[in-house]
Amino acid sequence: METAFRNTNKYFYYAFCILGVFFCIELLNTFYVKNGLPASKISTLIRIIFEAIFISCFFIRRFIDRTTLKLFLIFAIVLVCSTVGNIIIDTSAINLTTWGNHFSSKSSGLLSNMSFLYVNQCLFIFLYFYFYKLLFKKLSPMNKKSLFHLYEFIILFYGFTAIIGFLFDIEICRTYAGIPGYYRWGYNGLLPYTNASSGFWLIALFYSLFVFFKEKRKFLLAISLMATILAGSKALWLLTGSIVFIFFMKFYSNRNKIAILILSIIFFTLFSASVPYLLPILRDKIDIVNDIAFAVEHKDDIIKVLSSGRLNFNDSGGGRIFEALSYLDYLSYFNYLFGGLGGIVIMELSFIDIPFAFGILGTILFIKGYFLLFQNIESSFKNYFILFYFVTALLIGWLFNTPSLAPYLTIFILKTESNLKTEGLCKIQNS
Image 1 (cartoon, rainbow, N blue to C red):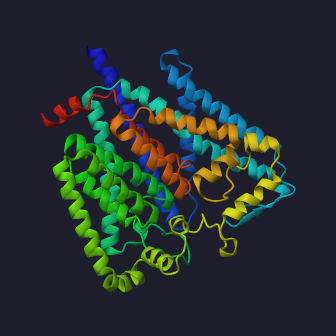
Image 2: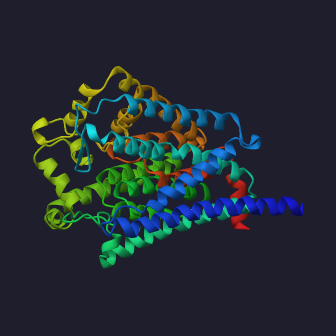
Image 3: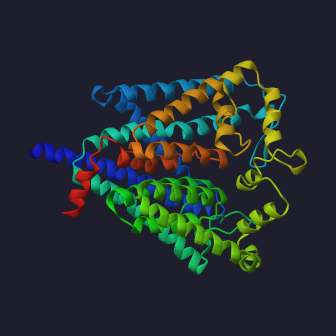
């Protein structure tokens, strides 16, 4: 009994430290990125070290199960696809563009490095999830509860730093801090990247809704809602409103549903009536409001506004969709199948950039890998999370290739997993 208790603690320390290390790395990146510096290479080094550990553990017999094997095979095949595509792509006829830097045929080595980094970032979630899940299975209910509390502390930490940043206008807490000569309204606290904050708060919002409906805890949801609003993302605003409305209508009784519907109608009526008075003030203060108002006034495409101009099918308007399509002329049939443009920012929209990186075969396997991850989510939340996660990937970039989201996505899935006895955890919590 004593030995079993000691071993359980050992695995808990591993799981706790892994989550804590990635949290600390992101804080380090925040101070680099929001001071206009490149992200610290320490984060890449730590990630590669953990990947080596995860892969090593995979070959230990007790760490293998059927689903893990599927994920590992997907990881390996997609990696091979991208590598083959990268080798056979002809860079002599095309200028490849990323963040304003132009590369020609002389930069194939740099392209290979960028491609490896991009692929590594995209596939990290598969290694992380199944290694972490195997650790998680060895934990006692009390240990699992402590691990969830650590993630909740992280949500509250980022939420409070966003709120404090908004109240006192702290530069490092601004969403778009660190970009010289560029100002947009938004406060994501001490999260380092703009698009990563959208992914982080989407996952945190679903986690908070889960504990609200299953465990009747309200505070975490309140902080998450405030943080999603303060983040300053148009797509996140739309998704948050839709998610909250759907879940409250789904989980509440018919009487409460009617009350929510009536309150929603009253809110939108009052909001619509106040728009003529508030709009001139908000347009000067919050540029997102100005963007949406401009789109409505000029009957512009709302999808273009939500995607910050990336999904603009009007060529004269400078939309990047035509730039992406122009790359197709330079791809061979093998590149269509295997990709090869990983790491090249083409559209900054995940569902557009992933096929260029992995090709048709690799993209199908990549999406299959995510469905294998999401099959673990508790049934009443699974379909909604899949829908909103992929819609987010359609509207923002860097969702699939942000490795810092892997620990938080993993904790959310483990929390909501259908075979996890949440009722038992609630009893422990209330005791």
